[in-house]
Amino acid sequence: MIFVSSGLGDDMTVIRCAHRTLRSAARASRGFVIYLANTGTMTSGPGFQVAIGEFLTTVFGRIEAWTQPVPEAILGMAVLAVAAVFVIATLHGRRHTPPADQSTPQTDTVGEPAAGDPPCHPHTTDSTTTDSTTTGMPS
Image (cartoon, rainbow, N blue to C red):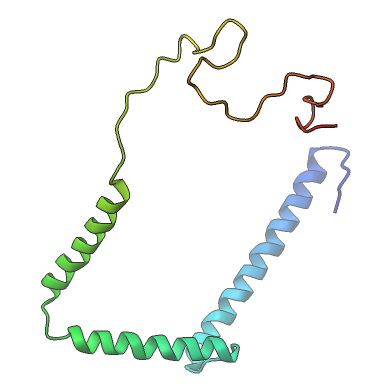
């Protein structure tokens, strides 16, 4: 919807009206969610979603039963160890290289990258076959 206003007052009226409408809709949806939560029954959902939920409930119930005799402190350390393994695996092979000096660009006299630097994309020398102002693709 496009509003053409003749002054600041009209814009503010439209904004206030939209804000009040959205606030009322949010209050209504919150009330509906609270009502549904208090009913104690699942209202709806596709069959595959219900089946996945029941499967996950069974799986995690078994995991809880299996880990019940283990103290929580040991379980917490195990979770931290798993997280540490993922962090180490993520950082493995990274090298810390100092940033290049950005004050002097690494180009030769023609404006092309210095020898040994790979270009970021293929360059063409015939300017009549490309339209470099729009896409850089052949015209």
